[in-house]
Length: 331
Image (cartoon, rainbow, N blue to C red):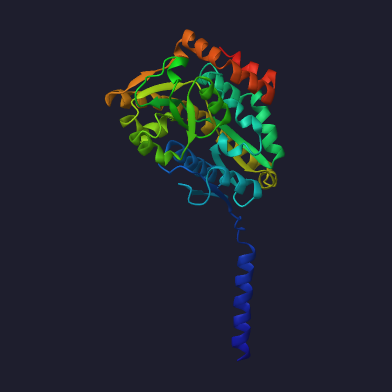
């Protein structure tokens, strides 16, 4: 009996000895990442690519769990969840962050930035500090800013080519004050309704036009009921943020890897989302629709800017003369 007990103790000791020499298993950090869009969209696929690349770069020390389609949080609720630390990251539109920085609205100034290149230079350059600093103070780490892509104003009956064409139009917007004020200044009225109700509202004549991103316009097949499409030089950004306290507690090397991967993917997204614009134009034209693009016509852009003069003055009061005039100076 004693021999048997001694044998068991020896075996246990040997096993413990082997375990003591086994390599330690590193803990895996989960990044909960809610987004409003579906996983198959351009933004959804980019977010998944981020998770894949981060896992590979860190030997699977990070696992990114994506919650697409708003199934956990979306919009301003996703932003709030990141701020509170309930989730670690999100990349929702600038409209979700107006509670933390008034300058989120500045970038949507209609006919402000000359073109997409000027807007992207703003996003990736030092001038975006007016947004980044506010978000950092509010408890976010700004991982990246990237372009939402082209916006359109599409109407049932009138192809908008100049300011006078807005008179009498009832345009759906997402409620951005700068856009609303500008459209009203050119004679339109605006309403705020959910995107998934726009098609039927156009069909029923409740509204005569819609302001939204070109990809949403095409994905929802709105060209079937609003075939007259103006590509408006009004821009928006996605704010890719992390909870600052969580991010700052990560090892420095990991923080650099996260920022580097995100920056690369954000700049790639800028190119991809505008490349898709040509495809959207083709879809609209194939369906019998018409396109106007005043950003490509200096005279048309000048006419719209003149019509927006009062809106720009209000923006100078709210955001500061220097910030507004710097955007208008873009050529």
